[in-house]
Image (tube, rainbow over all chains, first blue to last red; front, side, top):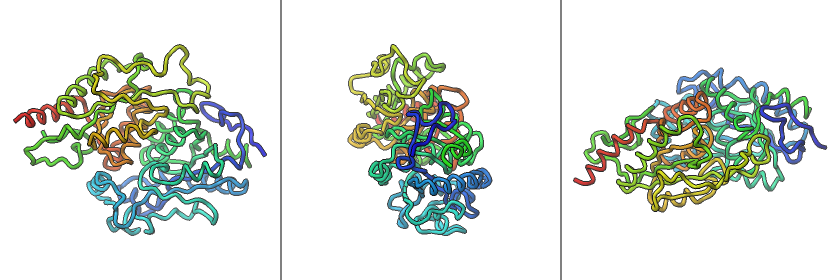
Length: 227
Length: 207
């Protein structure tokens, strides 16, 4: 089976004219309590959770469709080892300076630490058996992980992105995926940022120069083609 | 001054404000992204060039490293409509005005300067763990390189007036993203603020 192109900006996606379920992965970035749940890291920093939670509903619909179509589904989680030995000292220092120290105790356990309640993916878009989980110490999902190896071994050439936050972990991962040769689509209503203008700017940056990092579409435009 | 007056915190993070010993310039690398003739027509280039030249001289004189990244069009992007720029050599020379023989010149086939291992290896070999980011264009090459550097633990300062954006609004938002969450990709400061810190440091080294 082959899908036709998705109505997207700045070009109908993908650039090679069609895509296949067996070569496409849905990548869900950091839908963790720490970034969109009450008592998590983003909440502790005082940002509006409504902005980071906005994409949960559309993402759940895309997730259901991708599962029904047999796509590879990847979930990423940002978090550190309990002894913080994989946390760069400047990252740790910056978090403590604003009162949301990585490794410090919070309402959802130790902030950004693997295995803690705040590190878990929220129930609305939680992984199911057989889906890939990528634990990453940084913003990008390729650095210090086996994501590239898993995608290549799985024959994946096309990536569809959901997740948070748009301008940080989603953008870093999408830039890296694009640099590695994957054809990338970001779903505009399946992502959000701690600042609305930075969300809008991050979407626009993808579309600059004829699609320097890939393309942007709505989840509805994708679902029209695949579901 | 033993630190750069920057936002959202004085850079680098581990500077001691009470110390009489200034910044160790030998640990600093100025990373100039997209230093190619093809971008010279972008608005703001003249100011950025002046800043980059001054920063490069200060970093070199303190024993730091200056690295120029040349962007070769990525294989994937070149297949997309609108990307190619006919008549321009993508491996064109680094800007002569700011390059010296001892500077690093690294080609990258991607938007991130860290996509191949060459930059990371060269910086580690030189003992540089603090980076000043500058160049063309803010939202693309500079941002991708900054993000990769930050994940690798480099302490980064993006020099706001030594950058050239493709678009003034996205360029401004790109700087805003850096400073969110207490400096999620490090700090942002001006050329003048960096020079003020580096000059005092150079004098201290002489003493």
